[in-house]
Length: 185
Length: 144
Image (cartoon, rainbow over all chains, first blue to last red; front, side, top):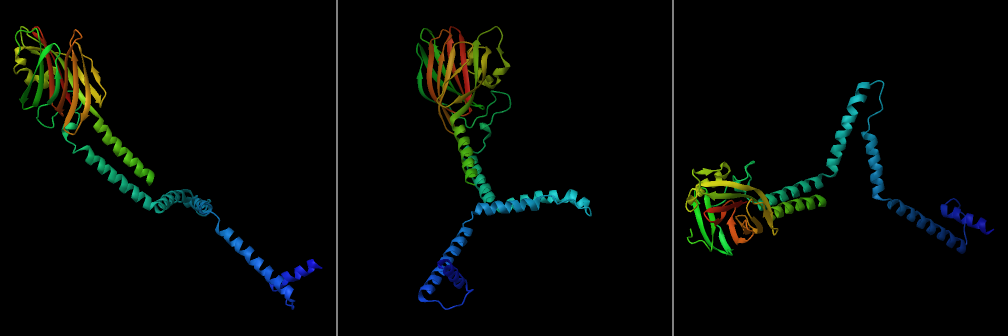
């Protein structure tokens, strides 16, 4: 009896039965309608919650199927053999560039800025800082200035410091004469 | 994009650090003496003019004993392979124009001849001379 009544209430709720119901019956029909709304809303939310990644994977599969060479056609054998693969490659590259355009541009600008910074910090490319071929002692100078002697200790001898200036630069000479030498330089 | 930026910064910083942390030097070890006829090894040509000036002009024969490049790393003493005695060079610090070096030289008898700290302009020669009897021992050094 109760099962039959419930079926009636469901038909009422679906609009398939249009008989008069008592107050208790109307309340049950309203409850069934409300329950139906809740279930519908839950299912819609579940559909919305399908991960974006899954959609992306689906689109990726679709793209792959588009990019694949077409099935050879008996009516157009030449086109089927040559054109589709090339088109697929370029279209994939194009899609990749379209997708990551902002990242590529940002990366290129960043790399350029950092490279410029490195060049500035490294100096002005003065030839004096470049090694010249295989000759180990052919060195160019930055400036012609003598060395600054900060400390000199010559145990058992006498140290003399002087500079030799010529067109090649300024050479600092530290000359140590033993103590037992009667005549120095 | 973040990874690309981080990589670029890393490359740039490592380049700058490398330039600040090392120096490329060349050295010549020379024996100076007086012979019957003046003689100078061809490999000493970079020092030719200097060796013909006083007080070097008191000798007339100059032979290269050893030499070559040496790569210095900051705060790491490097020993030079000399034919007579020994020497070590320490790169204490460097800037765009100068190198701060500590040079120590031992004589052929193993005794310390000199300890020197100097700030030398990049590319200029420094010469360390010690005499024994009438002959001279010269260590010439240039760095960049």
